[in-house]
Length: 109
Image 1 (tube, helix red, strand yellow):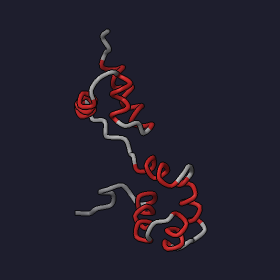
Image 2: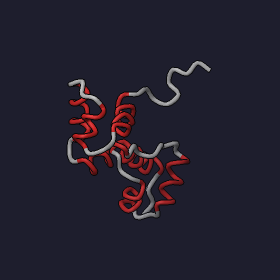
Image 3: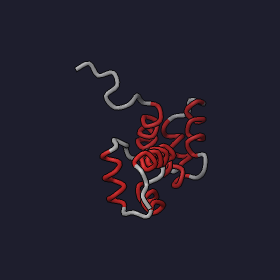
Image 4: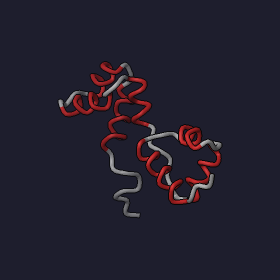
């Protein structure tokens, strides 16, 4: 069965937007992960953002929502770290990941 480029590109873009890993997309398409990586590179599709998925896998469902609500309540990084069971430094890194500007944004040089 021949699948055209637009069908593959649409599936890969949709999968990356939904946060699917390339391994998952490869098994769905019935090809190797290296083939999916090659197609994504050729079509300029960035890898899926996996931070939020793994954060919720580690700390439970709606962990990102709970983190945001603690930030909205002006909780300290130490208090947030105590709720989730990690250090205040990791709480700061998660805060930067959630709220910081994209990389390279605002640089003047």
